Image 1 (cartoon, helix red, strand yellow):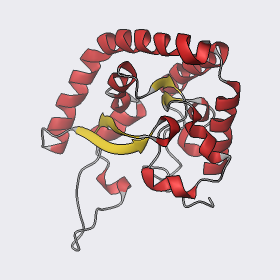
Image 2 (tube, helix red, strand yellow; image 1 turned 45 degrees about the vertical axis):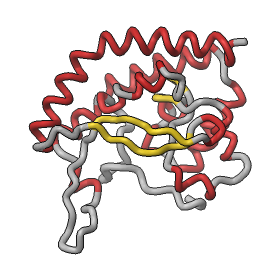
Image 3 (spheres, one colour; image 1 turned 90 degrees about the horizontal axis):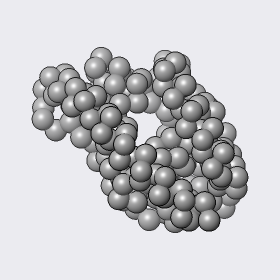
Image 4 (cartoon, one colour; image 1 turned 90 degrees about the vertical axis):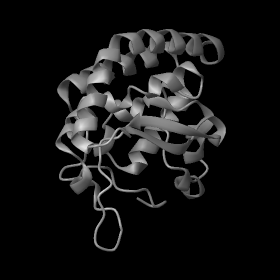
Length: 202
């Protein structure tokens, strides 16, 4: 009952309210990124697997430049992440556009984070179960360590959420997420701008 009916209704209601409340922060972030990146293209879109591994386009604010080396290859993430982008990411403001995806039913407020499509063939049978629920803007793995824990731990937390999904767990994750944002904690692994890629073993 909660998973199929109540949770989607709560998702849409809270997402609508949050979109209204966070609109000024979204506008300020967009303007700051336009100045920082020197472009009007400040929204990042990428295909990600969602519920039952069905692919959809995720939307986030773009926090990195497109700078390349002499061979035309993108520079490491740490070199492309702008100062403004780092602040926006630490406050999770880059996630605001995903509220629209919650409203249209592609995502949930809470669930396993949607990862790269290229990871799909690398999952074992247990890890694949993370797609048995809609992906979320935040989730159990995010409040348990976000980008500072191993891929193995992340998947364990994701599957735990699938097996124990409930209203009380969602409430707990919601308030823990607010706590993490206010503390700016677990944003990145030490010395890295983004988490290492998953290769099926790490």
